[in-house]
Picture 1: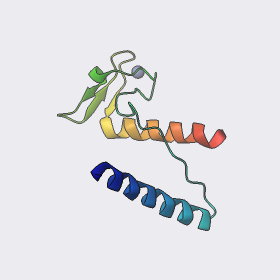
Picture 2: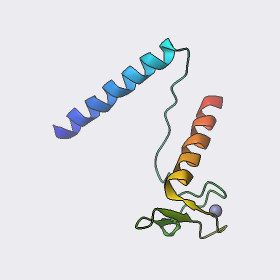
Picture 3: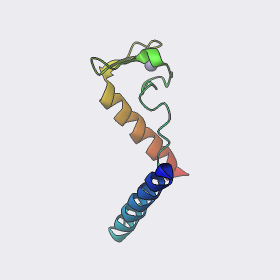
Amino acid sequence: MNRAILSQGWYNLYAILKYKSEWQGKKLVRVDSRYITMECSGCHKVSIKNVDLKNRKFKCVSCGLEICMDYNAALNVRERSLLNVKE
Ligand SMILES: [Zn+2]
């Protein structure tokens, strides 16, 4: 029941965002959020070892990219959304 309510809430939020986006002539793009914080925005290696939650740092075990964890996730959101727009 609780899960169903939460699911309905997200659907309503999505519907409102979609309506507002189209009203402004924009396209709303959904992004798959799985592993988005663990994926390196540089080389796309996914590892739990890339993330230092305590210090909010991201350091790739593969290529050595070292940036803010949230910034890395934002770069991944941007890239995934651009891939969805092209489809
Ligand atoms: Zn990397």
